[in-house]
Image 1 (cartoon, one colour):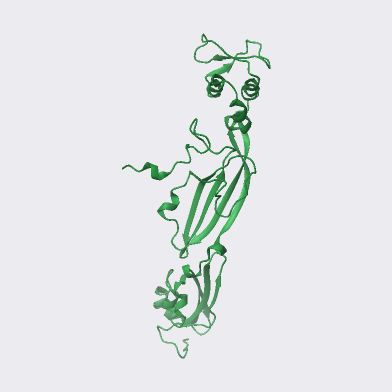
Image 2: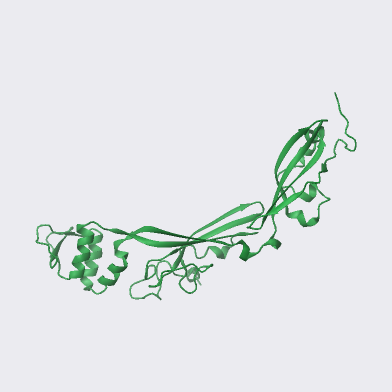
Length: 297
């Protein structure tokens, strides 16, 4: 049994008066509306028109051109009595004209603990700086397995002996400095080769039409900020000590006509990240050089 719907031809599809749109906190739009058509129209031709990514104004020309940034995301087909169907459409899009940086940015602070070498402990650095140069050098060598505690000697709080692992005939490392013995016992007798260091991570989430550009990646895995200036959003920092912020990650997802982006910085130990010997906090190190310095003239 056939049915006739007046006002429709074999190629007609008509928009229903149910268009709705919503803009989220990131500036992205989602919208929905539906179309009515004969079932044969959908099956024979219209299904080739309702393809993902099709601009809404192509299928719904009565809509104002302002909405031209909306593109087809999903289609749901619903059969109706009388041999016709309703095509429910979901549209998504993003327009840079609607972008407001202050509204768009989300900041997240997380505090955690990380395992760091005991040689980076702030008290170790402070106290060993006053020790004899030979003791500092031998402590690092012992940490790397070149010296070991000599259990045949009477090791006390006033005297401690190490033998050279590669050459037992070499003169022992005899420690008499109290602060050096304190750390040697912690590391080599008690086995504390790492410590749980507190750290902060600061994440900035935003969105844009084009996403990251070449220059945005220059500071990845490098020191980018300190106490002045701090990363965008002005994260809190400990009151005492020199600290730096190292960019540790960048993420980007391109979808629905926009880029959702995030970048995260991690706070250094007190005193900042690595510096070359003798250069101090203002000097260069492994993580705070400038990529432009790598250019070859």
